[in-house]
Image 1 (cartoon, one colour):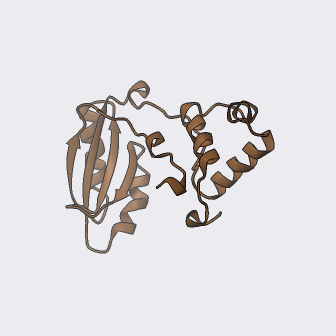
Image 2 (cartoon, rainbow, N blue to C red):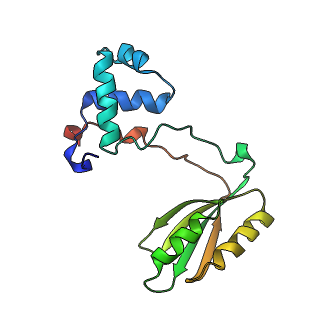
Length: 161
């Protein structure tokens, strides 16, 4: 993998990433047509963007609600001092734990949890709190998502920053 700081995004990369953000299913041939460059150029750029870690993967963006998970919550987890690594693996075994971030805040970890109902959320929270080395949790239930996860507005060549 190319070191992320070694790869500088240019105008063509920005346009390419914009097209992929709009339609991740687009093919290389269609990308080359839209961008007005050779198919080989698009393929080479895609490979470099993947190697540089700019593109993490090519996957579908799923709506949790459409999968039956009507309740989302952010769970702040406080871990016994020096034990963060010991709780990551057990948290990763709980399917409803969608994301886990180390944070500089009141707690040590911030987890996004998906649940089918409030009762299901309570069951998941009970599983989380039983993980050894977790001292306490606090939960904020998402009432409504105002802005979805997005990155397209950040697409700018490095020299434009």
